[in-house]
Image (cartoon, rainbow, N blue to C red; front, side, top):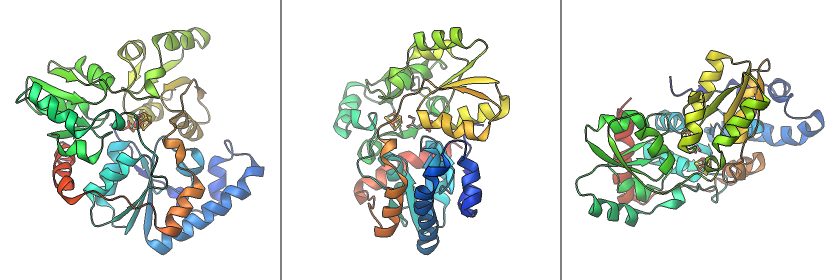
Length: 332
Ligand code: 13P
Ligand code: SF4
């Protein structure tokens, strides 16, 4: 199973019970300040008929308190497509909010900070794709969802880290262009006979992990199970025990319950999963995503108070970008 979007019951609980979920992470003296924002966000969500969709990299004070749905990019896209709320607050990065808008254009989609970008999305433009097509005529283009709507609009289909192999193979072509993440492309190529032409984009968080990191954590923590996101370099993936999307990693921990584990991915992911499994030892040589960290409780509160920042997509681009995302969703 590669996605685990679960409605978070936390946001339906009274504040003391919500605190019980995060008390091992948030000291009691900090709680009153957070509780003020959390209480107000819960009230505003009811008033606006809004849902908060939170990515697995959001901090525990968001992830375990005000989120209605949590998950990886694919799961958040699915939930955005089917929600009947009037307003979607995307606690994640801009491409996730754009994808939500593409899939459910009648809803108001808000992002609490417009600057919450992504190094992968910033690494490629629509003009770059047109150039790739000229160089490789007839070769289908698979774009990672970590791209702008303009880039999606130039693509045949999208993929996420949860379904990359399935999408690449499902096209039935001997060669595909897969962009912009070079490492996701190379890690996918290692699992398939389809020839993959990659781009040189990297995730600024995952590119920093090294194979030496894996060896040294194994040496200092005997018996540790190493999980890594497929945006990590291939030599890191070669040394780890399991690779998968953020949801797949959480799912692995839930099912396998490794006594000692490290997640080579963004820091908050370990914080969130560790709160769910207090009996497991999490080693945390993580890297922070500065874009994900732009989203905070006060900014979510402000987004709901002021109904900003609204995410819109040019209608002509939206039609073509939606086709690429919906084609991916149809793969199941
Ligand atoms: P997931 O789709 O695995 O959640 O990954 C999104 C992302 O931005 C990872 O860096
Ligand atoms: Fe983008 Fe990497 Fe941040 Fe994910 S972790 S949003 S891929 S910069």
